[in-house]
Amino acid sequence: MIGRLNHIAIVVPDLVAAANTYRDSLGANVSIIYELPDHGVRLVFVELPNSKVELLHPLNESSPIFSFLERNPTGGMHHICYEVQNIYTAVDSLRRTGAKILGDGEPKIGAHGKPVIFLSPKDFLGTLIELEQV
Ligand code: CO
Image 1: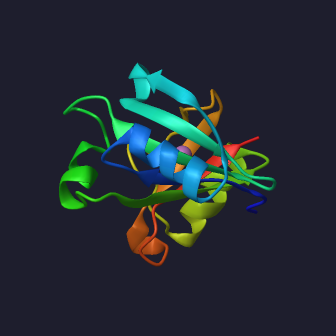
Image 2 (image 1 turned 135 degrees about the horizontal axis):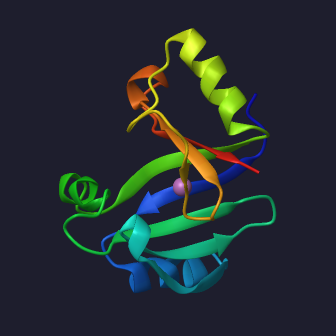
């Protein structure tokens, strides 16, 4: 069911410092800072030859990643995003296995303008998984 690794998301305490670290220490191509108010985040894309890393910082206290940063003040890996061909087929298949889809269980439009779901870390080895329809 899952295809390419679309991105890995890392929550960081300082977006400019994080972008500088990826650019200067790791020699990566980093984007400008984008603000996504609908998702409660500011982010920088790190472009890799085969995938992306997203450096995320909460926009405000109601951001879904605000409490994550409180629990992990130096930052940390937040989720892994895999691509799927059809998000509704993926949802049906996951429900049959008993996996929990977070939120109301319905796909939402994600940060890239495409339908996404999030799966509970309890069902997937302690890792928050995002599935994105491509
Ligand atoms: Co994501």
